[in-house]
Length: 302
Image (tube, rainbow, N blue to C red):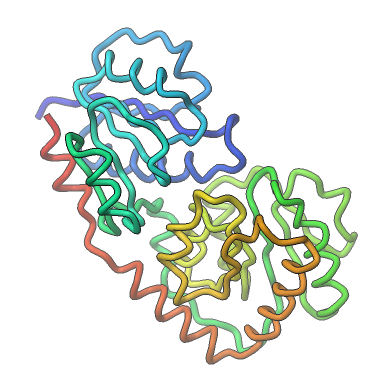
């Protein structure tokens, strides 16, 4: 079997979190299982990348790159694959992926000449997260993780940390943040966790407070209940996918910090109910058990 080549470009430095990188890492795993020789790079490198061969596949996972970057990719690949959550651009010819599939009619109308990978069958989660899907929940809440994106664009880490520490003095708070100095001294802070460490951290929790990007899918895959905050508009479809198995705040970016913080406190109080957490865990696991369409899709690539 001939080895095919693929290069993936995902927002890292240009983004507000590592969700794009994580999603493309999962795609990398799928490609390598299909005998692709694959490289994953930050999307910031695309414009200056020295393309020395015609790739079988170039994939772009970005909400930052301009249309010219996508056009450039098509000149160096037999096939291009573009992740899109918001019908953002008039993409050049290729495959468009939206695993949430909340706007399938709009995608078909806007991109009638593209190949569309729509729906949960095209969702991507790294294997290391999927392998932790059966977690027995503790009867009481002891550990809570706050992970709201690498840049915490709504500035919620600090107010939520202080509010939780004050309201629930017996709850041990953990936070993934670049600015640990601003947090209460009782908070356990983390930064730059690799996937293995991230899985271990999540699985040690009884509850996670997270944004509605890739981290939400990863947390639910680990079997941990989540309070989900839509911190940017392009997370809307992902939140809708898991609305029935989370306590959540749609369009959190439209509310004052005080309102968000108070709602989070109310949700934590609700999640003291083990029965509710178990119900949400079971619903999440059911939603995540979809047929993986990537294997057949990749086999059909030219």
